[in-house]
Length: 117
Length: 114
Image 1: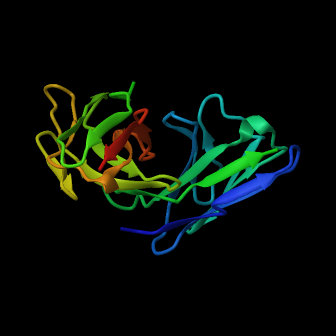
Image 2: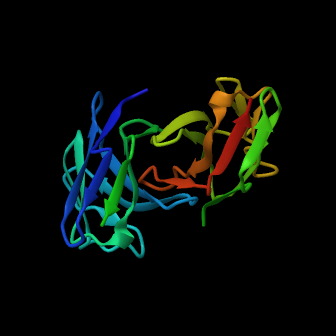
């Protein structure tokens, strides 16, 4: 399958600072990228969907000013957690899909463990 | 709306035991169904999928059959190994929408003991 690389895998930051997480599709062009948040012992919660070159679509209840998503190219999307607080500590996972074909598959990154202290 | 319900874990089995993890779904139209696996500290990997009714997805000894009449996609394996210990997520995507969005169940932790 296709490879999606997410970086960093782990990050610890101080409360009030911002953290950027990168998601790259290494061997295909991702027209759409998805950002998920996974709570302990819970499912993945879709935060937002981003299409290359346009603004991200956020799910209900997700603060767009806090979780900034940029999808400037077909191989890179970034999630920036602004003014992070301890409650933002979580496992964030991106996935990438190419919607040029019918019923295409989404491929997942390895995830980023964010700890805000 | 679209949703996925899967059995709560943890499921604890001895090596070589038979595994079933139940998954049922609610969806309009014609969803595709997936099982993803997440090993400790890693992201999700697609385990298997089925795109239409009566399709059987299979991979690494795991199987699941898309049952439209019971809206189910139960995961089975005849003989589990310690290396199968992971969290398993059932998911669907409904291509009636434009975004290819995956909707996940809550995940089931499988622990296989030697």
